[in-house]
Length: 401
Image (cartoon, rainbow, N blue to C red; front, side, top):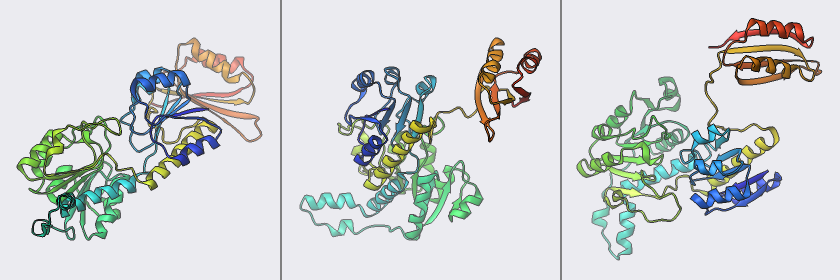
């Protein structure tokens, strides 16, 4: 199996892939047209990326079967194009949760103590204790979480260790689950903004969350509150955030930006970087040795499962619901050609198979096939299969939608 790694990736992961018997090509700086050409030349079965964009021309250039995003998200991959070509897309959720939560708290503390400004002043040869001795402190303050997935959940014990009250909203968060986590459940992001001294965002980027937090949200926040985003820049209306920084003294700690470069080194000319109320980092939330080693190990596990079983852990682009309306259940003797006969009969009526599994009983004498179809087969087809194939024990059709 050929694996092309088109991004920075730990040596332990490269060694692990080679130990599986994979032919590994490591091109950490390749991007865009050069990556498309490399795929065309090398014909990898698996493409591994971190922040590198994966486009439809790249997916069309070779014979890729699996794209692994060595990280938590997958918004840099054209998932729709992969799905059209039957290419699995997988990721490594939860492996960088602690690292991102640590950075989120670093940004909170840095904002509160104005650490970056203090360092800059010292490097200029200035001593200004009077200016930098002003801080609010975190003890007794309220942290508001928008999103309580794996990373958001890691924020909770850290906030509690600082003696903070935590309020939270997430689409999946119930009052019962909030009680288990020791946080106060809120009905909306606006309620979080209204009650919190500091808001930290931890939602995935998708069609529902693009520009999710806008002017109304920032208008609800306390004047002078802190806003932390280590998720994705696009979940925030950046213009609305900049306006709130200017007019309501909102102070922002951002690791992600709406228009950040796609390469690891580049010019960054976004005007938000000039705001005095901004403390920013370079989309480095997952960039700790611990997180990257864990992600590398998970990537190796994904490739191993795919190589050995054909199954893909953490796959993100399988249909949640297919067009199947009926399930044909075939109990049959485990003999060659039985299912081929059934599928030929289905094909003769132009019925499409959506999903299929065949379960063999102990002793390999009999099996049950479950075949999901986009419409019901005719009675004539069923009668013909029953009468014309002695290896078919029983047929039944179930309506599933």
